[in-house]
Length: 101
Figure 1: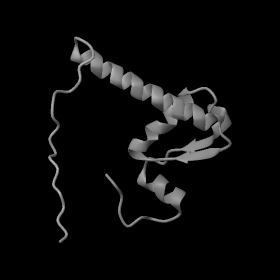
Figure 2: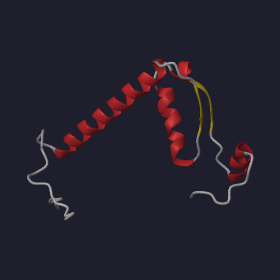
Figure 3: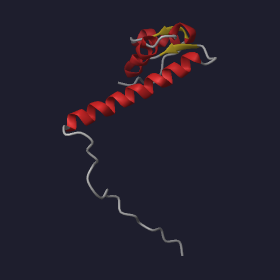
């Protein structure tokens, strides 16, 4: 017999509340996330790698995050954001069969 045990997928209990105002809890969660992101970027900047960043669309904001953290000149050699279809085609050297978005 090959029966799988089905576990309930409903959390029991309430979401922990650390402060009186739920919006402050949300703000603290955002600050913790940003701090973790900052630490990750600092670790990349102090590492041995160099990179050229090429992006389009929503991923384009990541270069801004890298450049805001001191040490970016140790990591980022250059960045390029081909926004138009013509610009992307030229960068890729081909015309894709379809585009996202």
